[in-house]
Image 1 (cartoon, rainbow, N blue to C red):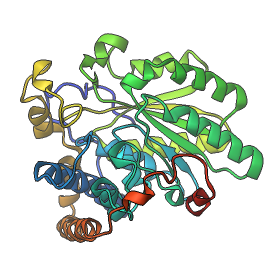
Image 2: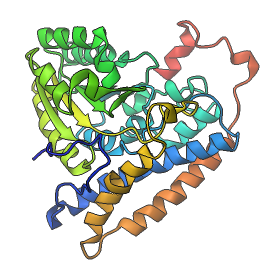
Image 3: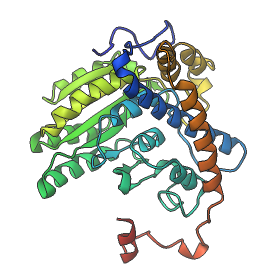
Image 4: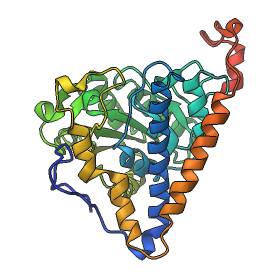
Length: 347
């Protein structure tokens, strides 16, 4: 039940997604909550940067929330996730505490990386989030290796998920990892969020229309699917099918067609390579949160308004606690640079 007819990289044409039946309401509300948390946290981060209360780089995943939340909804606590420089949504969807994310970006000791990693190096092993990576596609071999090692050492059926972008698919390490994962039967799912732009290069020019990347992967012998990433219900449904296959002991690949609404980063002049209104035009018709909200509001007794209010209050409280936390002392600057006994406390 994947939606493949429309191109998610084009703002033309309204999109609604799969219907939500009465039996699906509880799950759909949880998906809505997850996307709302990711959106609210990232909008708050943007605001903190504008106010000068946060510094450093920031890569927004606004508009791509359905991919992160839909995939992670199919995972268990023991599963592992690796991410990209655009990874706040993946972290939050995997259960990384929002206060720990805020504190990390504020540079506080209570941050999930001790205030040292910043926006592009979040990690929280307690949540199974092995970390973001500023190296394009750098987290993919982490995930495949971790999944393979855990299966060999501990048995069980835990898996790993590696999120990459369409730009990451052009990296040699992606294809090397795909082949090794197939050869070694590593239980990992590679999720390519094809957001239409490898920085400023249109992915359609590199690979073809959405779905082409999945077809390329099929040529390696790895099971691959495409799903329209504007619809969190479709993503979650497809992810469940893919995860079940991976738990059985074989790698798989999922391409999610999404759209990069914001510039590549806070300092990117994206108006030089696409219309200034591109993100706004796309959101007007394709916003995955607004579309799911409309489907839920068609049902009596929906909890949309309550979720919105709860998330807003949680975000404000988490931000305030994070900003009030202690800053790392200067004397700690050399800690955790190399392997040391101190790291055992964060294992």
